[in-house]
Every structure is written in C-alpha cells, then in structure tokens.
Length: 156
Ligand code: DQA
Image 1 (cartoon, rainbow, N blue to C red):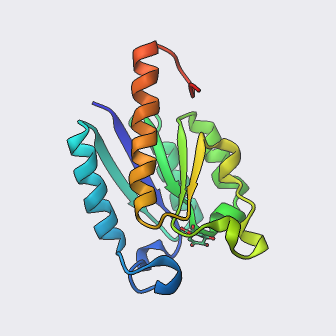
Image 2 (cartoon, rainbow, N blue to C red):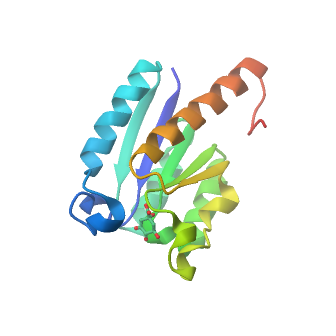
C-alpha cells in the first residue's frame, strides 16, 4: 500500500484562527481528516507531522526514508528561508509535492521564492485546503505511474 507523509511547518497548527482572511477558517485537524478519507478511498495510507521547529521537521523528513513513498509539505515560512529543509528533502530522495494555502506568488515579494520548489516535483499554491487534496492526487498519480512503469524518480 502506498504511504504518503504530510508535513506542515510553523504556525500551521493555528489554522482556523490564524489570519482567516488569508488562510481561511478550516483547521489543520479538519484538513488532515479530509485527506485521510481521500487516501482511504484511493487505497493509500497517510502519516501526518506538524512542527514549528526546523530541526523537528528535518528529523521527520529523515525518518520518512524507507517508510513512506512520497512527501507532501507545506513548510510555512521555512519555504522562503530554509536551505536545511531543502537539503533534507533532497537527501531522502522521495517525490516531494509542495503545497501552500495562499498564492505565494501574489503576495509579498519575499514569499515568491521557494527553496522547497527546487527539490519538489511541483507546487500547488492558492487553492486553500483543497490544495492538499490536489497534492495527494498528484502524489498518488505519480507513484502509481512509477509502479506501473517500474521506473524510479519523477515521470513526466
Ligand atoms: C504558507 C505561505 C507562507 O508564506 C507562510 O509563511 C505560511 C503559510 C501558505 O500555506 O500559504 O506560513 O505556506
């Protein structure tokens, strides 16, 4: 069974009450419950991890090696600052799907650059909580195609 790790970074534990005009009113627990249901309907399994700390996020990414088939990540503000997180994702060599609730390209200039994008298969940004569903569909589609082809690494 395919297994995907869903990682959320700093301040995303406050979803639902944090700047609702930007991030909406859906909580992280609700997003995770919805995703778990979608995964079950697709015959896949999910694990969830959230931390406000860069080191804890890196440790969780390292632990995904050999345990999960792909990583969905919303790294929050570390997206724009963390070379260490980018290096961790590159090191474990799993397909990475980057998610943001808001459209980072339509906001402040400092949010337009993503270190995660360099090591991601692709980026889903601006669709609110629905973006996590899109990310899961993208991850499963990729993994199923890789399994069918017997190939490793991202396929076009
Ligand atoms: C975010 C966008 C980031 O710029 C911001 O720091 C976040 C949330 C998003 O999901 O839109 O914490 O990743």
